[in-house]
Image (cartoon, rainbow, N blue to C red; front, side, top):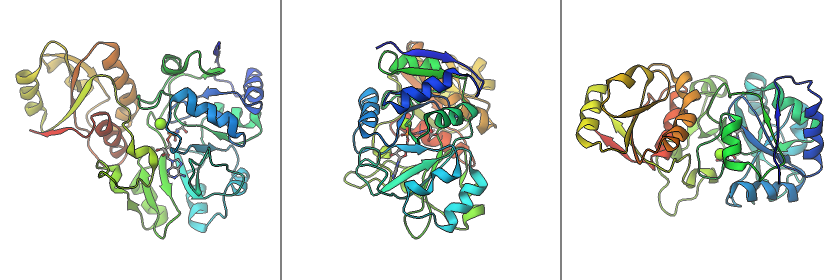
Length: 341
Ligand code: TXA
Ligand code: MG
């Protein structure tokens, strides 16, 4: 299949109507969002949604997020919208927040991965919203990467993984947040953070008052445990190179790298540190700026492979605010290998 590439930053671009038609008829299109690029299909067309799982090589029990472009599109997808869900939507939508609630019959078992719940998100990206409008239906969309690889934050990354497997890619340049949306479940008594992202735990707590952080945000799921979010049990975001996180000061990091590096070892460090290391470096943002770290992290994880790294020693990011989302992705990319210096 030839994948059509449409480059635009204009929500009124008539070619987006064509993308809408492709989606309504059961096709697959990758679209930009403020977080990462998503691989979209008509959420009401289970056959089309199966195509997403096939193109990505995604396990069937890992449910998809349904994307809407107006508040009114939410109610038909869920059993009810409780007050605390409304509060979150008023404060953070459109934006990088996904809310999980018990699903309605409109959501089939393929989208929901067999669960009784559905994850919904109202993205802020003008092109994402224009494509959902053009399709005229909510769009199921996971990140537009091959399952297990780092998420794509630009159209080239999408084409690298999915070129030839999907109908179209809409290219609107790099994503502004750089990590996927925050996922919150409102299905239990206490709201539960399942995945950290652009909306931080502090911001959620301010609106909700109470918030539990799922242990899988920080740690590897214990063998045999059931994942609250099925996506968290799979190997994730990983480059082909082996990634090891080093916990300690920059001086300790330099000393460790100098002692243990061989010819194929890279350092994944902060921009201001790059010149001070005895090996090749890839950088992910600035040391005290988690916004820039989030924007760079997935691209950096792809870059280590492009440059032929076999092993990567990575600096540990701070874990507050947006830093928690960066840490969450990096620790998965490292298969939870952290060395304390
Ligand atoms: O920012 C984002 O959320 C991006 C863009 C494209 O919108 N999408 C995205 O989708 O990251 P995906 O499929 O790569 O990640 C969705 C995560 C997975 O970990 C999945 O297991 C979880 O959300 N999830 C989806 N529906 C769920 C549900 N009903 N219950 C629990 N977890 C759910
Ligand atoms: Mg993903």
